[in-house]
Amino acid sequence: MSARITVNGKEAPISPAAPHTTVLEFLRDRGLTGTKEGCAEGECGACSILVARPGVNKPTDWVAVNACLVPVAALDGQEIVTSEGLATVGGPGTPPTLHPVQQEMAVRGGSQCGYCTPGFICSMASEYYRPDRCAHPGSDPDSAPYSDSDAADSTGTEHGPNGFDLHSLSGNLCRCTGYRPIRDAAFALGAPTDEDPLARRREQSPPEPVATEYVQGDRAFLRRGTLAETVHLLREQPDAVVVAGSTDWGVEVNVRSRRADCVVAVDRLSELRELRVESDHIEIGAALTLTEIERRLNGSVPLLAELFPQFASRLIRNNATLGGNLGTGSPIGDSPPVLLALEASVVLASADGEREVPLADYFTGYRQSVRRPDELIRAVRIPVPLSPVAAFHKIAKRRFDDISSVAVAFALDVEDGTVRKARIGLGGVAATPIRALAAEAALEGRPWTAETVEAAARELRAAGTPMTDHRASAEYRSAMLGQSLLKLYARTTEAVSS
Image: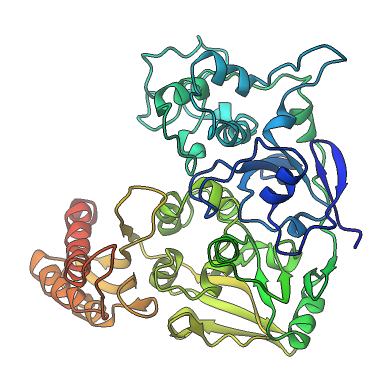
């Protein structure tokens, strides 16, 4: 019952909040109403806050997350900053000094109704404090201020002359202002000063993970200190809901009013937060967030590098994990097709030890798998060397922050004009993510030619059992499968032949 959280520099007890209470509800109950609820699903960003997390280039990173999805008990012992906490409070009778992000949003017209503004500000502040921001190629933190006529830097990416990555605002929706003045504010930001307290905070380690036993009535939120303690707890509590980033469970709580007698958090277990590159495989801890994986791998797994920008939004990727995406067993999750194409396996841990299961054998039915209730996904293993021809195609109604109608991942070895190996992972066309075995067989051992690809595309169109729903018809899904392979061939023929 001693669970506590540091909010804007002041420690506060979590009690008497119920174990399912979100950070959003907790903050608003404390009068911090800058944090808004827009969708309760992590799609609009009005609720975003900053959390002190282990850094990639510095001891601490300020990471923006959706407060509407995270149980406040999950932040026991941790440190957060809201939009109110960014300004510097003056003495009696002295108005607060706006944070540079707040100042630029104000002077450049980045707010009309203001509902989404605090969320944008927190996401913008996270990018403002990114340690390597001004190291973006072509950027110069001492260059002339950004002008409205500047749209992007010379690299053609969506970075400002100050290195600001506009994709850091992904997941924040504005309904009335329009994005141009928000972009202007982002691109006008300089570097944090030496006196900036949140910049200085990055040089110190983030709060250490704490064991949590938060019980209210007949419901509990539990976090053990080690993997061994956690798997023994799961043996005692086989019906417990296991959460990491809560990006899926949070929606169940908010939208479907689901409650659990026992929730077990695994997000801070050190055994689930390792990333190792071995001679024959890459092992990715199941509780590393997608953002952490993306920055640590730094493009060394090209197929994952294609996946990350298309996976939900930056706000979601800052909390979502591979273990969670696989653990839910959803047939429309974006990572399973990629991991199937990479021939990945999952390492399952229990009180009895560990076992490794190929991902192709992991799913057994709709949201079902071979994982037992007393087991955790500890890590994902990807064999190396990697296939040199790789692509991830996500077909959705929106370019970003949307659920796939169809997801297709390719990993091919093409040597001397012949396909030596082909692996194709599919999502959204069956009750589980699947491999396109017939299409793979139609490619392997055959020349990488239009004739071979057309034949394999016919097999790919027949893969799975696509259904018609509000996202797409079964016919459209089948057509997109075949079209994806034709698209891959068109884009890679010149590269392969050279």
